[in-house]
Amino acid sequence: DLEQLILPTGTTLDRFIMRHQAHFPFATGELSQLLRDIALASKIVNREINRAGLANLSGAMGGQNVQGEDQQKLDAIANVRFIRALINGGEVCAIVSEEEEKVIDTGNWHGKYIVAIDPLDGSSNIDVNVAVGTIFSVYRRKTLIGTKPEMQDIMQKGTDQVAAGYILYGSSTMLVYTTGHGVNGFTYEPSLGEYYLSHPNILTPTMGKIYSCNEGSYNEFSPAVRKYVDYCRESGYSGRYIGSFVADFHRNLFKGGIYIYPSTSKAPNGKLRLLYECNPLAMLVEQAGGDATNGRQRILTIEPTDLHQRTPLFIGSEQMVSKAIRYIESET
Ligand code: AHG
Ligand code: MN
Ligand code: MN
Ligand code: MN
Image 1 (cartoon, rainbow, N blue to C red):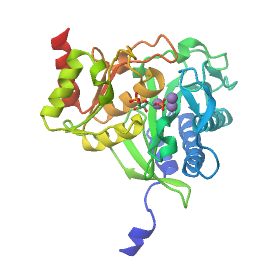
Image 2: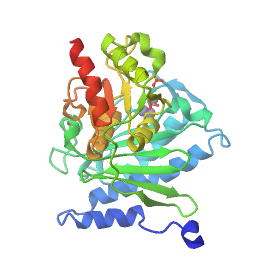
Image 3: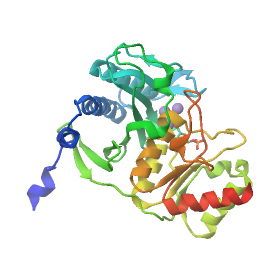
Image 4: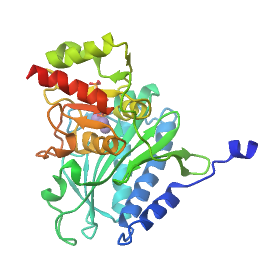
């Protein structure tokens, strides 16, 4: 009836986090607080993205980031907002950000957690009103609490993540995350400033008919990857590529599909970064029953060696990823 249509009922993110924490008797609430801090920053960034054109927030900063990309104003703004929220929240002792060359020591040395973040994913889409996102990955520190965080706290395999998620600033703003016990999606109600549970226990279809890659680079793909893309075309699959990894990933998560950013002559290790793009979404997709590989091994088992290292990526429905791997294996 009308009542149902008007007000979002059900569980807010805060209530969900608290209930979820109840399953962990030893949890002392820091991870819950960390997730709340990320959600808070996302609400601020959401508002700035929605009004970018009005507040002169679109366009480039005029400088380049460590990736060699023209940093967009919203890249820088989102970066500052998430870093400030994490520093003020007190739970995080160190942060790796796509927009920061070096690790940020937050000074909260009693914080148990490390966060790796892509503050704004898909920044080439900002000024043209196409969906963008934020991706985050959470680790427990390995070194003694109260001491200065070290590189061994940062350089952890994806299997060591304690939480991972993203915010998609799309036709609606959604937060999707996992702490290793399934994937849940929350939709933001701006008029109330709350995220509500809208997609509980997300599972991705094991098979799909959507492939996502930048076909403009087709001629730079390896013969095996070209053969797999040809196979997708011959199978009558739909090509869907937004240019925002979070948006492409989210659509494929619900509909089934595969996203590929392989090695190309311009980007021999692919373009997507391991720590704050591939690992978090690899954890999410595995929790949802999908797969993520670099063509030779599970993304989550890659031993990081550099903050901003890139990796080729094949991620999505399990049967589609295994098919792509068969093409690659038949080549080597
Ligand atoms: P970011 O905006 O955080 O740098 O990430 C952009 C990434 C990813 O979001 C997207 O899928 C990919 O770059 C698009 O790359 P191409 O333009 O080379 O296809
Ligand atoms: Mn970038
Ligand atoms: Mn990105
Ligand atoms: Mn980014």
